[in-house]
Amino acid sequence: MTQLDAPQDNGNAAVPGTPANPPTTRASLRQQRRRAGRTRTWWIVGVVAAVAVAAGATIGIVASSSASPPAKPPPAASTNTPAGLIDRSHNFPSPYVLTGGSKDYLYTGGNAPGKGLLVPVRSFTSLNHLSTATNAMPTVPPGSWGWVWTADVQKAASGYAMWFTTQYPARLNPEGVPNQCIGNATSSSPLGPFTPSSGPIICQTWGSIDPRSVIAPDGTHYLIWKADTNADKAAVIPTTIWEQQLAPNGITLLGSPRLIATATQPWEGALAESPDMVDLGGTYYLFFSGNTSLGANNGVGMMTCTSIQGPCNDIRTAAFIGSNSQGTGPGEESLFQQNGNTWLLYSPNAIFGTYYFRPLAVARVVAGTHGPYVAAFHGAVPGV
Image 1: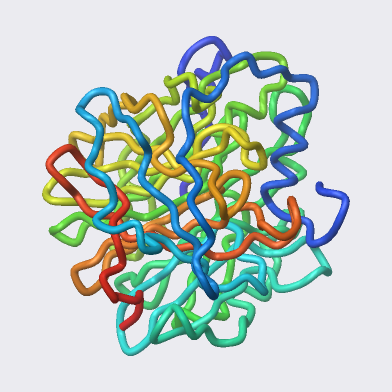
Image 2: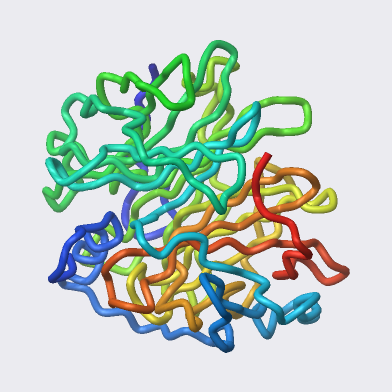
């Protein structure tokens, strides 16, 4: 297995590089690290307008009101709940769906050591009806702190491959703080048990987080992730997104890592993370979470990419989805495609308790003349 480091990180350029109440979340951990000894000077340009709360467990939102350039995208096809809350009763940080077969699988961020499942997974045939969560990876990754988040799972040449983020106390950044790094694991079943690697696989100078796999039309797998340069508390270093090809086994990195995107827009606060890429109408779009995870300025952003291997252009001056009636900040997002639909998952801060449970929200994304926009569900529900 290849372990990646980036000695060329000099902290001056684009480099390779807890709430009071339980449950503790991955976002709260990272929030503590970002805010300590650091002052943000950039402010959000705009957020998505809030709309009325719909009946039952759904809440409506609208697409971002501007994009520059190109001209702003068209409005949602209908204002009748273009996005909805699937479940308010559980915590769904960093949601991710694996499709295929007779069932689909929802993975979410885990819990602090001793406080719950390490990698919760729920199977479903309709996202409205999730199974009880089980532990996809019951074994703590060797040498890690024992807290796993941003799990990504794909069918590989033999079995299933998982990539995840955790913290490794022995891997220190230049300020002496343990790095968050990326590891991987394998299993014969999407439900696990996944067996983790013996140590970090990708760990740049300031750490590496948020792995997401992308599959090209020819079946080639790629991994994208974020270099955790905002772990540097002495300076504001715009974060960067990286890509590298994977072997058919889903866990071996091929070639060299490639820089594909950098946070450049003021609304992002120099922070673009939780990257995920999707092909919409023949164009690749990189979605990401911009600005502080638990702040009102947080939003889901979007860049247009030349290819899976980039480059991706950061040109939108506002979030694609921002703070709305669901709560403060949509948090980390992911996308999956099924039955002709493209679904975007995210987990806003709860409307019934700041920084407590993060409910699961889903939006349908459509490629229009002026780019992707949030569209109405049209009766479709994610599921096999």
